[in-house]
Structures are given as C-alpha cells and as structure tokens.
Length: 219
Image (cartoon, rainbow, N blue to C red):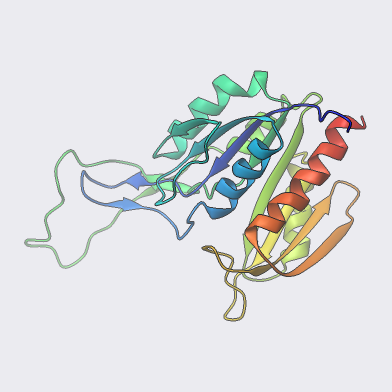
C-alpha cells in the first residue's frame, strides 16, 4: 500500500463569542460539528492537525494540537502565528462579523433603562487577510446563506482566493447546524459545484479532505 503523505492542516471550528460585559456576549448558532469532524478525519489520515476552536460542547479528537479561543481577535492572533507553517487552512469556524465597540467591565444593569443601544464594529476578515499570504497553500472556506447560495459562495471564493468553498442554505427544510444530515455544495476555483443532498458531517469531511489532498499532492 502506498504511504499517504502528511500535511500540516490548520482547522478552525465553532462560533466566536464577542463580550458585551462579563456576563453577556454576541455569538451565533454554530456547534463546531463540521470542524471537529474534519479534524477527526484528518487525524485518522495521519495528517498533522491543529484545531482552533471557539466555545463548543464537543470533545476534541485525539492526536491533534487543540487550541481554545473565545473571540475573533483571539482566533486571528493564533492563526497569524501558525499560518506560515501550514500546508492547508480549513476555515470552518463561524467567526462573528461584528463585536461591541466597548466592553463594560461590570454587568450592565437593566435598572432605570427602557432600552439599551450597543454600537458594533466590524471584526477583521481573517480569511481575506491570510489569503494575501496564500503562496502554495490550499485554502478552504465555508459559507452559510439564506438565499442566493451559489452566487454568494462563488463571490466569496473569488474575493478570498480560495481553492474550495463549502456552502449551505439555512431554511426550514435544511438546518446545517448540529450533528444531523443536511444539504451542502462544494465549489472549486474553476467554479465547478457539486451538490450534496442529505449528507452527514462525517461524509462531508471525507469528501472535502479528498479534494484537499488531490490539490495538495497534484500541484
């Protein structure tokens, strides 16, 4: 049997939490399942895996380097340090687009308030920043939309210089969150898209890693 080559793979997973005060934060519904399944499959294939994860209820797979973060800025700093040594980045995390401009040092009280106004500022686009140093690395991103999924996925793929993008549509009939099966599509930089109906996150991870290995080993 031919020995499989090993890649240094960086994977991000889960949501980020952007604090409003010591008690509250802004986040999203990501469970981290896809990123953890990719990390598990990559480790089974004997790749060197670093998983950078926002807060989840999941147990990291064995045999990997696991890094826990909370905010988008923390994830950005970790990736900046590790990106140079990576052969591939799979950006599966649902990074919050915005964060509160100011974080209260104490819990914000509702006493005497009928409303609360919070000013949000943009978080850095981590994947766009790293793509400027892409070199020969394989970059894979994720895209979740409520409409125009393919068009928006291709636009993101082009703007961020990705090799692959995994996209899904959130609807009443398709919930990509959690461990259940869902519909996804995978598109490459040639704008070829494959629709995957009712696929598990485990099988999605296998298909994605197959494509990444083909790109990495057939340059």
